Length: 464
Image (tube, rainbow, N blue to C red; front, side):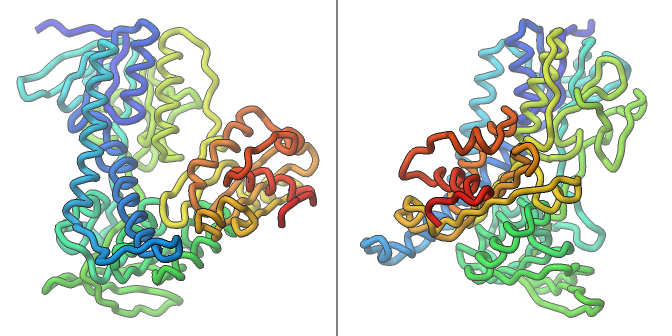
């Protein structure tokens, strides 16, 4: 069978791959995309979207218990875990179907199957109906990543779960251990804790949410503890003994190991890139700790071969993957896009309270040699936050004292994942403190705290 030729072939239909394919098609390229499981990838089917659906259910459940605070009454409050999960899966299914529609709309050829790269410019796709041979001068690898599993802590789907098992639980945990307090771990801890699980979070680093600003991490930790979570930092899970419907965890802290019993463990200790069985090494692609090494334009060093998204390394974020997809498609089409600035990509964690940040933390800014001005503003000083019944939180901003450049912004509290984009735009436009001070923020809104934090960095806060 003769090979089918395309201007651009994308391997992987997650938020990096499918967006790359759409942008390529918009620019007049003949595009094919290969996906082995579900259109939309991990993010849409097993990550970003279904977790937010679960967290929304737990948020509403939490608010129902606070009904009296708002002058309302709610009796017999409960939940149906299966129905909560079914709603989450339905949301994912709806959006996955939407990706299929977008592929048709943009005349992108979809191949469902397993792709390999037998030679430069060639893609072989093993499908249910046989093998398809494709050729292109431009190939984009967007195969994503999967959960990292540590020796002795491997998931079994029964007592020890990965994020996939945690998204479709067969039962409600009573006593839960979450290993890892990054975004994935702390979101699941927040969800199950809110629904009533006795939750313990173990973090090997010196604080929870270790990539966040230390002040934000400390604030979030206090809130988690108020909600009943047990937080253990500088602590490792060395071993899991399983049997009789329980797990005995060997937990090491300060050189001492203790044993503690749980009925469920969620392992959230990072991810590994899906680099195996593609043929990348045979083409001369450099792999470093399960991730493809690329330049700022996502080029692998092999002519016409690009890698985007999680497989290309940190930050492991869907929106970073999508933007890389657009950039690479424009590069292939002969345009001259700007490379991505990793420090201008926001990170969001949808626990309760939410956490969001962009740019340098205060500590990183000082390490980089900046003389900094730091502003802070608490939610308790904001009228909208009080009216919402969400007075716990903080907005923190970090500026270069010499130039006024916004170096970083860090938030914890209600809806901060929606607010952070204001600072992202500010960094993209190389905004200074003067620009932000002279911007009129609408009242009453949570966004006024963004303004106040900037003012506070220069000793001008108005409402606190």
